[in-house]
Image: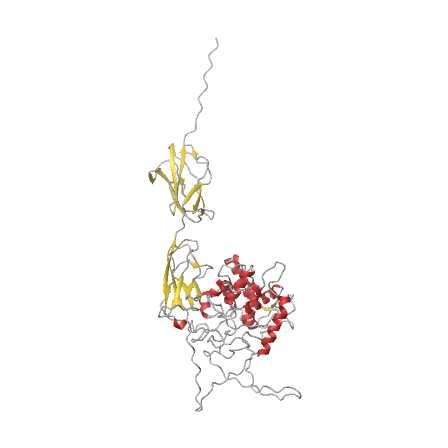
Amino acid sequence: MAAQFGRRLRKGAATTAVAAVAVAALSASQAPGVNDHGRQTAADATPSPDASASDGSATGNSPYYTDLPPLKSPNPSPSTGTGPAAPGTSEAGIPATVLDAYKKAETALNEAKPGCNLPWQLLAAIGKVESGQARGGRVAADGKTLSPILGPQLDGNGFALIRDTDDGAYDGNSSYDQAVGPMQFIPSTWAWAGRDGNADGKKDPNNIYDAALAAGHYLCRFDWDLSDQDDLDRAILSYNNSREYLNLVMRWVEYYRKGTHEIPDGTGTLPDNRSDDGAGASPSPSTPSTPSTPNTPTTPAPGSSKPSPKPDKPGGGTTTPKPPTDPGGTPTPPPSTPPTNTDTVDHLEDAGTAKLTAMAGDAFTKRISTRAETKAGKAVGKVRVRFTIIGSTDTTFTGGENVATVATNSSGVAVAPALRAGEKTGEVTVRATVVGRTVAGLDYTATVTERAADALARTGDAALTCAPGGEFATQVEVKATYKGAVADGVAATATLIKSADDPTATDKGPYFKDADGKAVRTLKALKTDSKGLLKLPKLYADDTTGTFLLRISTAGGATLTVELTVAAAETSSPSPSASPSA
């Protein structure tokens, strides 16, 4: 039986009130944004357009653990991971494999997206809130959780309504989606955000190495700089779009920044409280459950309160009530689920997307816009549209992904993230589809052109002269630009031509040398460097004297003709002989 979302203790209104008081009490001492640098507090943050325009959240806004960090700051342990955690230290400690996964994800993101500045403490904070650090580190050595971690099914009953998007491949539920794994990704998000963090050839949401790396890429996908508090807030809100969630994660971030320590796998503690007060604790309908045996009531001690007449389920939560029956004893079917916005979508229409063209390596200036409509042509808001780059291409969305999911706005329009052209030129297809609804996809074509330059200029002005049979002392160097900006990686050709009117290669005069030392007068497959510079190899001269032309041309039509002179050295005239003396 697939394991559910850890311990699920149902707390009443009193618990909620106590938690609220605790949050308020900690605000002054643990407010994450208050420091000497005047950074914005998390409580002051508001969801950004980017965050709210995304998939809604990585988790589908599933429930999360709401336990607050201990008041006492953690102290690093000198005996890291060498034995059982000392009493009271497991809350501050992070299981060894889980901590290793967070730190490796940080290293990978620093290499792949250095501008994001992802701290491992952010992954640890999210992992704590989402799954209690993979249920206290109950993972195998390769990072695989000992049993699947599933959130409650998102059937609209106290949660978001997200119908099945993966045919149960990740969550075992073919009716509704459930958040999966230690970082609690919903299947539709994992489909594009999933990563292989332990190099085993798989992308498994129930593997902490895979999940931590995926979470890092997810948080860095909009080119956010997480060292900036505003961007950090936006990234957290994109993971779960809740102000309370943001505040809680930031408190754990600050707690872990003050120090933590490694504890053995499987010895961490699980939180007690959840944001839904434990609702949804019963197993998913897709997973058959074993009836639990009620706890035997104990005799209360004198003066103690009476035992609960309804025993709790093992692991927390209350016994699921039986559905009501009619007088004939037949169970009354549950009320039917009302149609969602997604159910009303009949087709997708282009929403005025302009021509999509970009030079290799550049960002597309225009973005794809798609409108979800009913059969009558009315706009449908709050529908998730998935944009997928099809085929073999290195063009991606900004952030390096080839899939992005965006919710339609009140006008029914979803705007895809900006595309960034790769080095492969030609047409690229981007397909828009509705998540959770089988309707025809809508294809868009984006064109990637080769890198180009529209101007070339020499970087020096020294005369290019040489004696017959000699070597030119100065090498030719040019700089390529496009619309005034540096044109890097632009293909170029250099040819010693016959004349200004005849661009064919000459067979005499100056020449280059190939790898074998033979004379060549045309060089192909040249490219400008990152500064737009192109330095040609040395030039040599045969015995032919005169003026010759070197023409350099680039993709995009830029050309430059350089004059070369081969002349014998001038000799001075002898002085007249003196007349003989008389």
